[in-house]
Length: 96
Image (cartoon, rainbow, N blue to C red):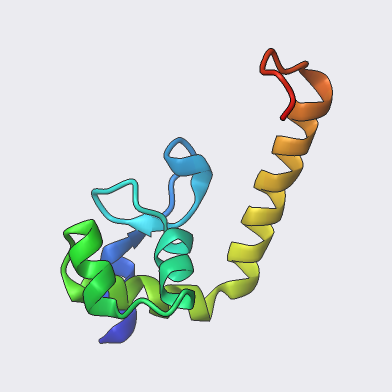
């Protein structure tokens, strides 16, 4: 039952949100939900903030805890990409 809920509510496609797992029919990534949850927001607060059913928030958190290493690897890949872009492109913004 729980696996069915996750499989129906969490998707990952390479051309949307950089392939990060996200809530179906949205661009809200599992990692974004987890960040709020880890900042002590309740599932109800997150649900209200994103205008999503609590069941979607619960599915995202269940997916996050079951796949935490995958999520961490995706974040590391994103960080490496950002650093590569910084080193290959000069910013036109003044340094603070």
